[in-house]
Length: 174
Image (tube, rainbow, N blue to C red; front, side, top):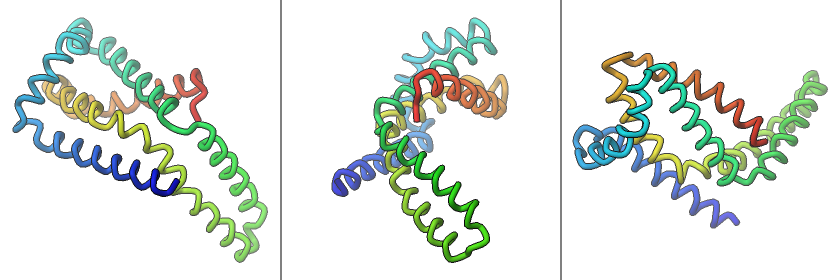
């Protein structure tokens, strides 16, 4: 099992590296920029041209849905639920023992042991979504910067949080 975790973490770091390389060299790698534009201009670009605010809201909803579904189907939901239950239990215990430093320290140690497990499980979907998300954000940057400046990022983040909460409830994502 640890070997599988190591391989998947390696893939996560590879995808992160490729994503950062693409993001940094977006203007220098014209083929990628051209191909992404060919795919997104007639789809998301058409929505943005139709109505910048409603179109962007639809795009945010679509990307949030895709990322939520990837989280649901590419991560171990049962393990995540178990980890969340364990974290709730530990927090409850920590409140009870807040006046007992030695017991509190022991509970905190248990809580820190959980973090790598949950990190590994929640990062799994990034193997499949990291590069497409970076390509989408770079395309958004080119498309929306002249209109909104950097404010489009804030609009996207707020919308993504709202839609993600809705979709996570709808699809029972841990």
